[in-house]
Length: 108
Image 1 (tube, rainbow, N blue to C red):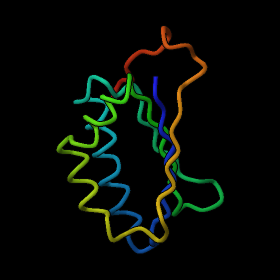
Image 2: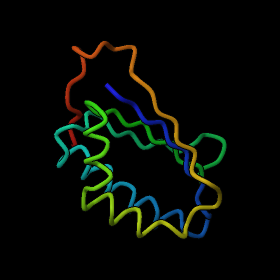
Image 3: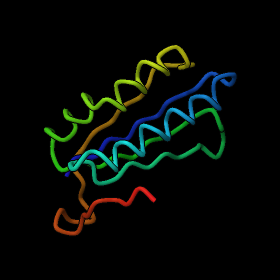
Image 4: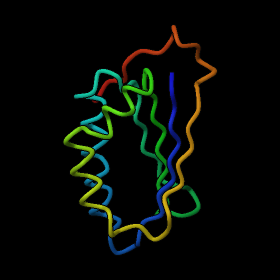
């Protein structure tokens, strides 16, 4: 499995609108993308305008499909001017749980 860890710093005046759009993208990812197994949105404890994403995909093809999904493209366009700093993206292979233990996250 492939994991993405993304940190996004949001301009405070756009936080509410950003979170609405972010949750729509997260929901679309786990609901409409068979290769997206997990999409967590975490508000930083020290800075509520810093958002962390933890995403798990079956493989690189699933990540590529995510980046072409209508909900992602809409999100990216909507929030593009709301960043207070460069987005930090890290990727890697999951180690635990093992690949055989991953199952699709529920959107509820």
